Length: 420
Ligand SMILES: C[S@@+](CC[C@H](N)C(=O)[O-])C[C@H]1O[C@@H](n2cnc3c(N)ncnc32)[C@H](O)[C@@H]1O
Image (cartoon, rainbow, N blue to C red; front, side, top):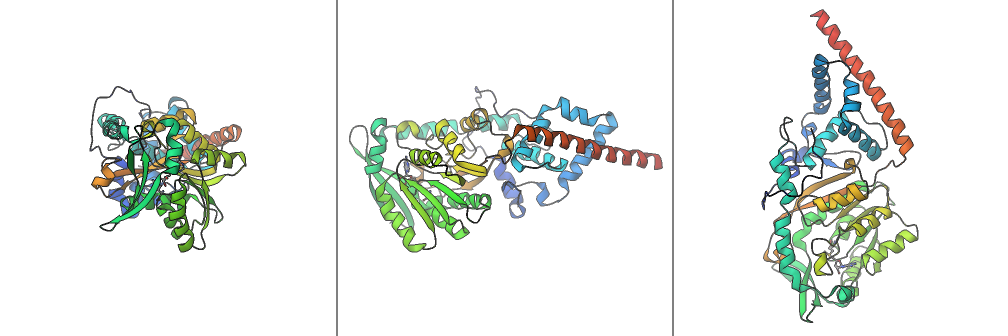
């Protein structure tokens, strides 16, 4: 039985090197990965065996049929989780799925929960470590950086007015913003480095899979070195709205982008990205994808900058149905606190939540603001279908079709037995 994403809070397993199952899958099936209609890269056995989930489903039907009649009512009434997966998938796809697609979705969600193990049992230790593993190193980073930031009421102005410099050392390019801390001491904030290129590129490819309309528009919070903009441009995502707080960054990086990428439709709006996004929503602007990679402005925002309730729900309003949200998660997973906001407050079905795992080049520089070399690329889809009545009808239809399919399989089994 699947366990809820919201497990007990008092888990004591600590695992700094805890490894996402998603990464295991990526490494195992990497070359044969497939993107489904949602654009999610699924690293699963169907990469090697196209009929894996179809066969799995048929086998299950036969097994259950041997033991009892009425498989359908068991699915429908006795396993609310199965029924929930069907609902979520309908919302995400905007159509009725096939039973093998539901099997595949169950498999995907289990990997996301760190819960898949040989199809037999759920690895409770892994799940527990998943919930716990990021907490301790994150707290160390938060502690280390506590004195670096200005007082909250002065933070936005300080980061807006901070001095900007771009430095290339031993082939690595880095962006610093210098800002006074609470005591007035000037502190260098390492804002962006091209050691994070793989993560940026993976984010860009994910966004590209989500922007299906050639005229689609993306919203990017935080210009930094403009790496995401450049990669998106190379992938053909040309309509980009950027919110950037610091005019110095806009002058240095924005002007470079405009010079070097002449067919890029780059609309840079100076200001705090939350305000810029609010204004866009108020004007009725909606985006095919949103990337939030601003930088913490206060000590309280370290590890929390992109992912508090207000930011996530604002981004949600600004997305088109079927559009995607991604952000800098500061975690190799989608952290539990973010999952809580997504599923409990925004009521996003699990079928709309995905991530892949990327790698950083670890250096003393990157260690100043995060830990380890793994970083997830979260991928949150705004469901295509939001109408409750249509969802109900489609779900009824799914179970009706399922029943018909099961009957055919069972009839064949009976014939086969008789013949034998
Ligand atoms: C990590 S960098 C972005 C990196 C960028 N995605 C890239 O690919 O190079 C963060 C940027 O967000 C900007 N920033 C910080 N706080 C912000 C805020 N509240 N609103 C808008 N931009 C902000 C910083 O000035 C910095 O340029």
